Image 1 (cartoon, rainbow, N blue to C red):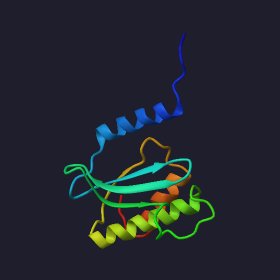
Image 2: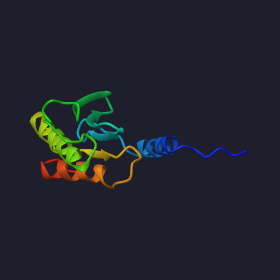
Image 3: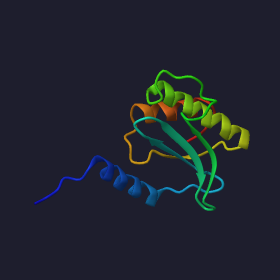
Image 4: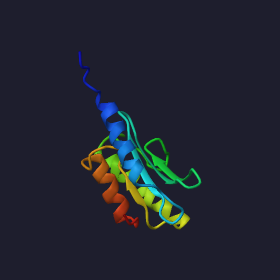
Length: 121
């Protein structure tokens, strides 16, 4: 009997395929996005040294009070927050890693907000 794969395992497979093709270096680090049921996380990673350079999430106090930490408004705030933090560190260009999620809704809102605040990808 065939067991249908879960959404989580399908997303993880997509993420692995994308990660085979893209990698963040010192010149162009990787902007990785993760969304859970309760929060949205984004981090800029240098894969050569295995170091997280900048991170932002809805758990941060700088994001402020949000009615919901999982909607598009929260994603926009995280996108602008990570772009500002990256600008302070001198990071201008990144490679976008959507982690197997569709480029739609919260992921697209985060990416657009990051672009509006100075990140290039």
